[in-house]
Every structure is written in structure tokens, then in C-alpha cells.
Length: 563
Image (cartoon, rainbow, N blue to C red):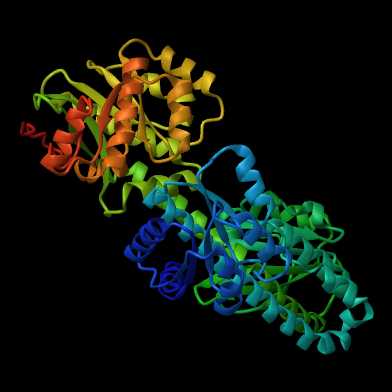
């Protein structure tokens, strides 16, 4: 998938429609820096529709607030007139980020919404997500075309067999890829049980050589199949070893090592079973299994095997994307579990420094992984497989332990998600032995469902715990976080800090934030300070503290910041 995404970056055509030339140039630079080479721009909204007809772009970045016709009109024309492909993603750009503006843009056919002025990271993340979604849609369409061709090619063969006695058209119309592997497997099993007259049909997914899970079952004996429950290890290994050699048929005998699992089928009257491996280039994905309660000779079993293989080919085509995704998720989960179990990471600390006197007032704990995976990527992977708070907990535990060696009495900043903060059994225990002030940092990009509940959870941690909102200024959500949570610290996003000594707009924004901080009693910390000019400008604007390579790099060994 990574190779496909990288290829997509290089060949994707992106159309930018914005009447402000400065915004167009900014978006071009952001996209080009990330490797997107085919960027077409226009400041004339009147030619946008025709450009889409001619270019057939892979993604459109569309400013909503332009002279007649405005972006809403262009958006509605593209969707209502059928000019834009149904899977052509459109990223709407708007200065107003209220709910009504978002709803209007999305109702007209926009796929996502981005507030102006744009944040470079958000542009890249949304661009990548939308392009990858388009690639997945195109891949699925191609698979569906291939499947349709396979079905058409086998219709004649099936019509001449036992399956031909059933209304194939009605069943094949039901053979749709479900929302989950389980739903898809169930449709396949029901169809084949009806078509080929088997008493039980099941699809089993292999996650490893000794881990197999039934996804779906149908037929009169379907109730004895333990769906979504791993088979006994001995049974899973036996099926893996036999499937590795190809399809087979055999009389049903309950193997002693399979214990109660095998007896369920014996008591149900199962007499024989046929097995069709489901494979891809990467190896075994699963098995299509069909069983009968009839007494059949070996020759009779062999004659029924071809129809099972035909159905197995169709099942593989339909199930392949979902099973690959399931296998990837399982592999990723094992990777994250190993990272946590083996402590395959270490904490580093970056000093927080007074911009006027150069004194170190605290340190932020960050995480580095032994395989050099970027922290944001690794934490996102952990969250995707339900291990986000587990990885957070392990990293915070390591940081708290290492922080005992920090010099001075400055505070310790720890990045924590709302889910971790709201868990009463985790964070209090982690912070119990910390002998210095703790600052919990919540990023602007994290959604918060209940501000009152989160604020109460922070208050319960006691007087030695403070709250900071990270990445302030990166988007609209950070300001709501600040208003609702009343943090002690607000960290100015690097996007506002970079080049602030040369940019009057950035200076004005930070000056406003400084005024807000003074009125509300919170303290500003600027992130990503890299030049002396940036530090002086921030200090003159009333920003009290800062972080960045100029002041001290993240390191295991803490070095004094240079004044």
C-alpha cells in the first residue's frame, strides 16, 4: 500500500482554485514540498468547471469565498451536473469554520473542510487521506470489474453442474462485498450452501499458522460453527498444513486433540468435508469449507470438489481486500504489543526556557522508538488498533522514571490524550511518585467530547498537575479547547513561530494571543524557536517561555540552554 501511495503522490493531478494568488502560491509550495508534482492552479473560478472536464484531476482544493461564481456554486455544478467523478475528492477551503459553513460545503458535495489560513500539516494530512481514499475506491472498482468477469466466465460451468439447478442469477446478485469480512463471508456461505446443496459451509481466516478464526457459516449445521472465536490451536495448525498443500476432501473424523470442537460436528451428523484454500501472493488467507451429512464415497467427494474450487476463487476475489486489511491490522497490533512489551522506545527531554533570562523552567518528555518510526506515526498506529492509551501509558511510565535525573526543580511536561486522562485507573498511579510539578499537554488536533468531564478529571489529579493546550493556532479547535478547559499554559504552534520576526501577520496573531493570555491568566510557550530573531520577536510580543533547537534539542542527557 505504501508503494501505491508513493506512486500516487508522484502522478496525482491536483487542481487548486483560489482567487488569492498568495494562497495559491502557499498551497503550491506545501504540496510540492511533499512530492506532489502535477499541480494545476487558477485564480479564475469561472474556468474551474471546464478545467475539471479537461484535466480529470485526482483532487480539487476549492476556495469557497471567491467572486461570482463562488466556490459553493462551482462545487454544486461539479456534483449536480455529473462533471466530477463520484470518487473525485474535493477539499473545501473556507475562512469561516462554523458548523453551518461546513454543513453547506459537505451538502454540496465537498469531501472535507479546511479552515483558512491553512496549516501545512493539515493540508498534507488531508491531501494524503483523500488521495488514498480515491486510490482505494479505484482499486475496489477494478476488483469488482474483475469479479464480474470471473462470475460471467463461470456461469456456464456452474449451470452444467449441481449448482445449475438453482437460480444462480438471484444468488450471484447477493454476492456483494460486505462492510466487514464477516458479513461478506456469510453471504458467500449462504449462496454456496444453497447452490451446491451442502449442509454446512464456512469461511475460515488464517491470521498465522496456528491462529484461525471462522468468519461466516451457513447451512443446517451452521449453528455448531463457533463464529469469530479462534479454533483450537491443534485444529488451526492441521488446517494450515493441509491447506498449504492444496485443496482436499476427507471423511469427517473428530481428532482427539481437537477435543470438544470436533465432537460438536460429529454429534451434528457431519460425515465428510471439502476444503478449498484461499490464497494470494503473500500466502494463505483462509479456507472455504463445505461439509455434508450424506454418506459419500471418495469418488463422489472428488466430483464435488471442482464446484467448491470455483466458489473458492470467487470468494477469494471478494474477500481479498478485507482479509488483507484484517491481516495487516493483526500484524500491526502484534507490532505495537511488542513495542510495549519490549519497551522498544526511550524518553528524551527538551528544555522549556525563559525567553528573557534563558533560565530552564521545565522539560517536555518526548518519545523515540528503536526502529526509528516517527512518534506521530507510531501513536496513530497504536490508536488504530485500540492500543493508543496502552502505548501512552508505557511511554509516560518510562519518562517519569527517567525524569528523576532531571536537574533543578522545573516542571515535567507529558503529552496525554483525553482517553488516558479520563481513565481513573492509569494516570493517577503513573504520577503518584513524581516529586515535581507536572504539566499535561493536550494537542489541538485531538477531539474532546465532554470538556466538563475532562476538566474535572484534571482537577482530581491534584494541585501538582497543570494543563497545557499544545499546537495553539494550528486550527479552530485549539481556541475552543482553551476557552472550555482554562489551561495554565498555551503552546504557540510552530506554524506561527517560524519566521515571525519577518512576518507582520504572525506578529499580530501572537500579539493577540499574548493579550488573551494576560486577560485569562494563562502563560504562553512558543514552540519550534530556531533563530535568535524569532526569540527576540516573541519576547518583545510578551511570550514568556519557549522551546526549540535554538534553546535546546530533545536529548536523553539534558544540557543547559544558552541564554
